[in-house]
Length: 393
Image (tube, rainbow, N blue to C red; front, side, top):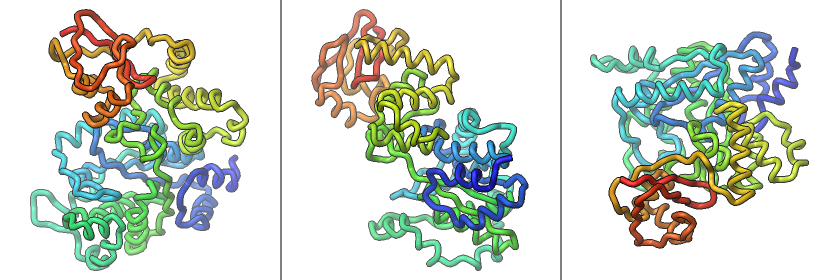
């Protein structure tokens, strides 16, 4: 049996804030499976490694014998979590939300143990409080306990108000919806990124109001992307997608700055970081890339990705299995081509790469303003690790 101290050590690893550690100890000492909640709004079809920081910690709870309550925000996704945002999120349709839910769960269970996960949707209880077809509203017993001043204390709301950015009433009430989720599932613990702290603490307060023992709040840091500066985000083009092909995933992780690698180890694995630091940095990074690629694609794919990496980057070769891009026309502007081939997230980023000399066709540098035409399959290379085989139209 795992001791209380060993459980605490594994749970607290890499955390930003725990409210409170003493309460967590008391809950763990009850020797019963805790209900560990996380809420996710399916606002996009795919997730990246930044999203899996919380999932990895949830898996730790599962390995310690606890139950994860994974709440999919089908109701709250239509509003959009305002945490950390400087503008109102565009609303999603019910069809978009349902499509995202399907892909989310496929990816989430590459980290979580499905047999120890209780999947719920917050529409189960929130539509009863805030009915979409009738004038029913949240009970006054909930609304009168929380003030506008309290909700406006959020840093992101303060900044938006100063900048003259609108804040909708639904966004203002978002923390109440998320907090009520904790009441509905009787959560013992809730996890989230450190930008979620306000929402998670609201859950504690609403549980107290409902006569429940308040949940312990555990927050985790945001994961920086491959550029080593900004948080991981698809919009920044610095992300590693859970659905990335094995070779791409392995290669991207090998490009993580050395000093950031240890944070990836701490937040995305359970390896002993002290022991890993005794390895040569290249060996340590290959081990990290292998562990993460194996998690999402299996051991064989991870081993093949390592072999491919060594061939391409240690021996200056070209990958054998390249993703194919079929030209949209006989001639394409280089910036348009790089974006269309999914080798850059935006035209601005593609233009920057071209200007830096990072775009090559069959080993020849391509300059800004050049038009690309191919009459037979040719290899387009962007940076050190991104390739596409171009096929004529």
